[in-house]
Length: 134
Image (tube, rainbow, N blue to C red; front, side, top):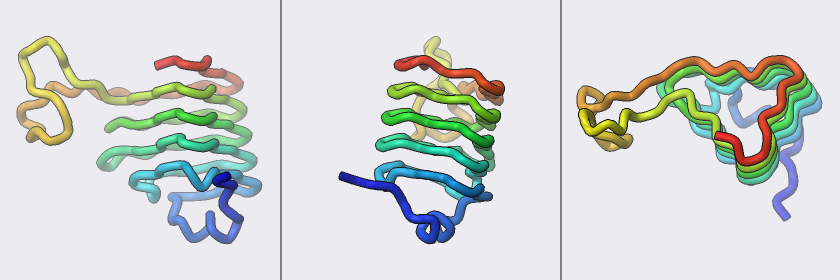
């Protein structure tokens, strides 16, 4: 059993901002945590990965739940507005590689050889992303 961080532990992680009444599983993976802004009354469940890349900022509004085995990643912003939710096994990517054969791909290749496309993503108020969505 992984459990959830205590309020004191959460305050020491280094989020860009952290609201009140937040529950985050100890089995959540964060990358660039200072670029993650979390509102009030949120819950992030086991094995989620929240990984803004570069200078990107991810904003999680109030009353948002991110369910287990979900990935948020990319070079552009991702915003989850108030009362939205991400069901389990979802992948939200604000960047994708170009796979048409004219560019190289993956994070080990110099940026000049990549054809990465990035765009901000906003999940609106009261919206829910269904289980298994990409």
